[in-house]
Length: 357
Figure 1 (spheres, rainbow, N blue to C red):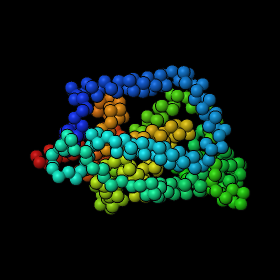
Figure 2 (cartoon, rainbow, N blue to C red):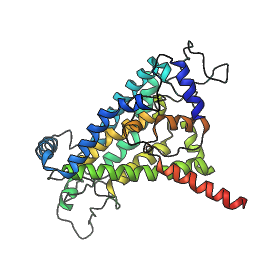
Figure 3 (spheres, helix red, strand yellow):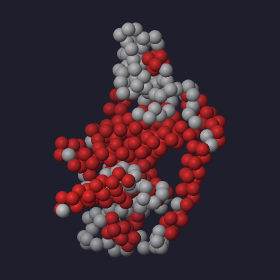
């Protein structure tokens, strides 16, 4: 299927240069690949190079009333998605030759090179606004009722942010661990969880980068198994069906999720960050990367600078594999990287061999 999609894509855009063993496409990502690699290597090996910039940034954020809001991460996620998804949608409209999963053609083979494929039915502004409200509702409810617990924050500060006295009474002890959730102490003076306690010290670039790498690795692994369960377990399959109800994969499918699946996606991301004690600034940087990757794998386009082409070959899953997943309804269960799905394919092949011998 992936081969036929690729051939169809080439036929729909004959003006694009043919690739000779991937050299043209490979050369186009040399600059972003080197920039990203240089940033990661220098940030980990020479954190002093970035210490002043990170300290200045975090000092500004730490004293910002907006950044101290308990709802900041939900608002950040909402805004990043509201910016990125329309940008990718416009690119989808105006680049028919790069679309990966055109459906509804009268012929089963590749489309004629002069043919402009019809756009799939897509939601207008009102439908997308309703979708975003449904998306934000459960998250805002948790933001306004649960105490935020971040690494590097004292229990006393956590207590004060949640409406409790800084010094606990015998029956009001609060754990600093995120694994022990705590409800805000609602009162006339503190009716909702409106602020979050932040660590005083900024992180180093080494800590930021390592936490980002590990958290994305963990999230990719955890969601791979959850996604596999959504497809393989009948009791969970119905919660995932909404995500596959479309004529052609496009950027708007990113947020076409049931409440159960959307919450699992967000909670797994939070767990991946919290379990390694990520700094709050790591979380702030994680969010736009997280949303960008989600939108890109659902964009339905073969983009020149897609993240899977920038990463070393074979690491990223990318929009091509995810388009095949949405068309066939199986395989490529990983969200971002490809090693978990390769491991599953290897395991299932071994099991098939064992069962037939």
